[in-house]
Length: 383
Image (cartoon, rainbow, N blue to C red; front, side):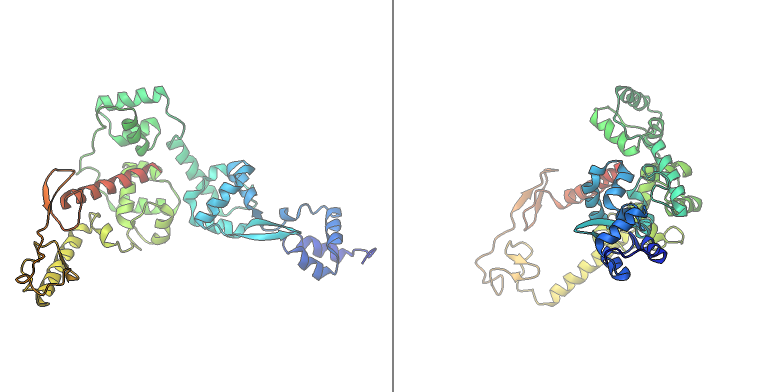
């Protein structure tokens, strides 16, 4: 093939395929060697192979989002954890991780919460979908409402002053300091401020249909929770709690997928029994159903003929599923009876009787579960 001149048609075909098809395919299509194709592409000024085509490397997108090429490995881990659709592209003897731009924008629209679009320079990845400009404005509003810089002594003094005055709620203090409510709550505990912000009365701030509609529309448009809370005049923690109580998650991207184009409450998932016991709207019915199920099971146990085991409720060797674990046929002839040992609760100090060893009584275990659930909501509000 040495010395064969390139025709204008071949040059046009090379420019069209350069960066979009593997070099091996270009060789097969044009009937040229690899070195001839690379040299002619250089003469045509087509640039680097990876700089042409509707894709971008993982390292390039890391630089666009974080401004640093060294974050490529961290961003690769981010891709793996959040399902970013990248694939391997081979150039010569090397392989690169690349992302098709159409797939990236489709993924980014479904996962807006993972990206701060203010860090993505407009048009740096080429033509952008229409929703990106609006999302960039929403992210800029979130950055204005929520400071992420370290606390200063002046900030701490202002926080102490607002708490000591006993005139402001947690939401009002958060807005005065441009911090999230979770950050305010955590800082109060960290620096040991005595007292707490004013509590909002339970009857205040009743949710209206307009509030629910504003919450649904805000999540659909990618508006942050602080901005939605400011729009409807409620606290960020209240808005997050309402989202979790309804959709069992605070992740706005997941809620957006379940909500679709409907109104608030559409596409609600069914909670598990454990979660249903913690939700205000389901815990009463769930407890009633569990009590009814327990009554049915107790009646079934009696039907199975356990009357000879009249001491089973007091014996350590009885199992509700296996029966007598010592193999006795009745309690009259059994010589292995062992009364259930008393245990002492490490939380309330009370005495309780259970076959399985526990540090806490049943009431304290339920209380600890409620505390853990509230702690989860507080931690989620800080993220």
